[in-house]
Length: 514
Figure (cartoon, rainbow, N blue to C red):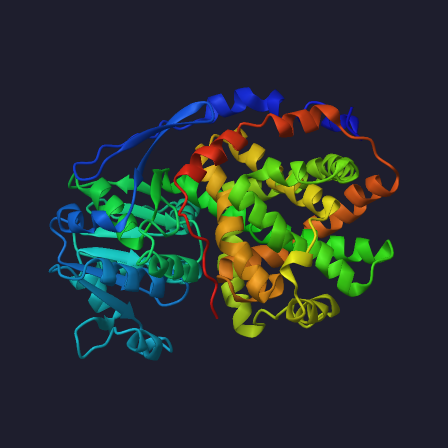
């Protein structure tokens, strides 16, 4: 039995039928690339593997496209513009960056080689009007503010490319649609922009190094949208690309960054830090066991060996602590995650991002890194001895319980397994957490996209409070292991899913640089 009877019917296996009802049928046809079928979980999915040996096929995939306009220079813009340019060297396809006339990012774009002098930098709306493929990579709130002007500028028959489904969610919330005479596609790298660029650069030495991506075809007016999207993904360096829908993508993405990718991990480590101190650890020891353990050895082991490996690496006493922590944390985490998903699906979370844009003109977002905990972390990271960082069993149990709750909820909502694995696990351990380990969780919370920063600030404290109030209280009271729940964890099909994904994983870890 669980600690609370209200959870008796909430075990993942009891909700299996919900996934069957909500599953999407995702298949596609490509005239250019090789489509593979993979058996993943209880379904077949279809993927295209990437690699630099496919770059000669890009002109054929981009048939009819003479210019790719990349709008924006924040997270994804620099990475995607440079990756596309480098992948298309020797072709007649131009990559041109479009920015506002007074954009503060112009010097950065010029430093990367995009200049007015060489015809690869221009005013945003001019670039939209002259491009065959327009990649809209400006901030989410800016998309909502300017979509009418963007739609007026884009040519009939052109292709609008998105790397996030936020705009669709916003249009749905106000009863609007995309213009009917354009292709609308998405390629969504499962990592932040610096990761997309860094692993692409590593791919010069190790073919296939890159960040996984999903793709979606929302509108196809000329029958070429699928190959455009796959060509775009391969040009970004994606080791493999899987299909989703634009709606599924924005729901899982906005939900995921408020969950285990950012918001949840923020709340988890802050609550654990205080709990460890209350149980006799020094501040430095608490930071090491809460934060460093999560972003270091726990994440690394999940990346290389899978989730179960973390549990199996513990001694008998550690496994018991893990089991108790997992049992105590899973349902409280699931409760918050369910609320987040409902807020995203209803459009409330999207509306809150738009509203915040106006509020921040008066009160810009503050930073979190000045608090005592994160200042302690500066010293701990400076004195770091990687081989001395432990896998703390309580930290591992709480973190993995939250990760598994996110996996189980996305399964219940019918998301494809590749999307579930990437948005809940792979993006965390292969892209975000290495940067958090390098510069700190606080740095990431203060320097990611506005949408993600807002979500982290809103939901991180909710995870913190519910874990403190319920999970750690249960641990302190000597809770028993929920054997049924833990059996669900051990036998969860996500482990097979990760094993299949690992076969397509680049052979190198991201080389985090300043």
